[in-house]
Amino acid sequence: MPTPHPQPRRYRQVADELRHRIEAGVIAPGSLLPSESTLMAEFAVARGTVREALALLRAEGLVMTEVGRGTYARPIMPVRRLASERYRKELEQVRSGELGTSFTADEQVEWSAYSLDKSFFEVPATESMAELFGVEQETMLLERHFLFRTHGVPQQLSVSSLLLDMVAGTPVADPENEPWPGGNTSQLYSLGHTVTGIRERPGWRMPTPDEVEALQIPGGVHVVVIIRQTYVGERVVEVARIVRRADLVELDYWIDLT
Image 1 (cartoon, rainbow, N blue to C red):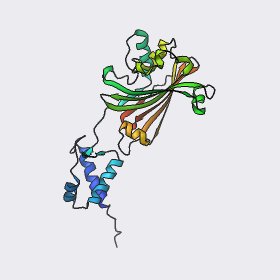
Image 2: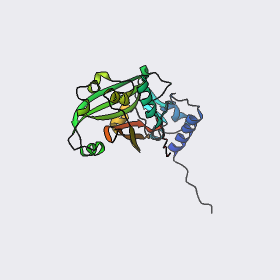
Image 3: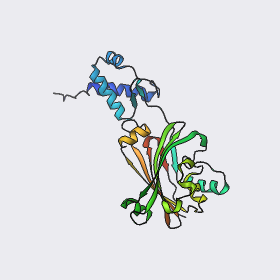
Image 4: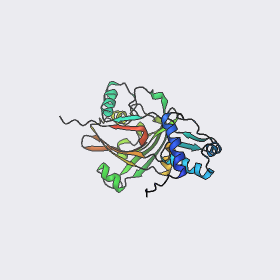
């Protein structure tokens, strides 16, 4: 007697068909999916089945739902390439006076396209931050919180910390001077400190609720978290935690072994 093969649950069949249409471009990026009532009629299923199918596609990051608009195929966003070579280029620009932006190192996007939310705080170093800086716990830091946007679209969250005794009373400590062309490298150079090394440690995780809201992250999408230490000689002068959507970033690191 043949072994029976269980049929996939109906909501998965609906999701499979909608997924196929999205991936084939039948439902274009940014386009609305048919209404729940239309999908119920097309697939001869209940509303609950349609909602389960859409929930599955949201969890996969294929669709987004907005109150008052409906469910639509996730728009295609530009992917930012993060390469280790960008820091060398930034230092060259700073030295030549041709300042760009350390935020993207993207020559196709003008500096004027960027904006950011910013807030600065003077805080004592926690145990973990003190370890990253190589200083005593409770050493005072200038903690700078940034939300970067490109053409108004959220792109990156970062918390950049500097040693307070190095920047207190300088233009670098004034949030009104942000965004600063040339970014971190240029700021430190203006204080007489030439960056000699960068250490970055990338990792991946699911976003926090605050990150989901700030970066408009669809369901099922991870974030890349980069811990960066900026060196002047043997001294760590800046520590940053950078958060970006994993589907919108490509990491490209070159390691010179010569």
